[in-house]
Image (cartoon, rainbow, N blue to C red; front, side):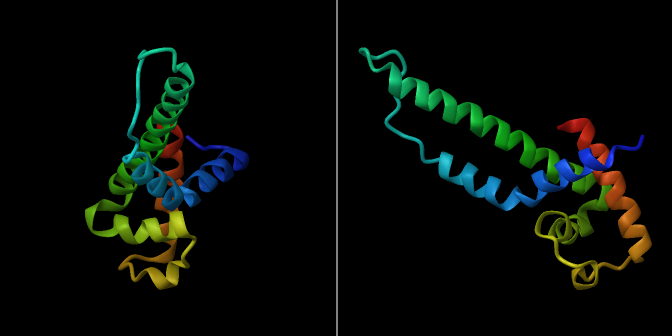
Length: 118
């Protein structure tokens, strides 16, 4: 199944934001002082609820990117492939033991599978 160029670009930018998403997840891990339904402080609850919804969406995207990279590139290569997919590092700097053609075929498959998950 092939995806449109626009959808591929959308997925590409989601992947390029991966490092930022991981950082946001780590920052959200320190949410504290939450109060659900205590007193009349619904503003604090609403803010926390929005943060939790955002955290869930970020985690879903990060996990989808990581799992898809593992599926397509394998346990040995996925971290190196992520440098290209999520940090725009040149194929030639990745140090992969596969041809450039094979890598880009797998990268195309990566975006097709990621499209199914996100």
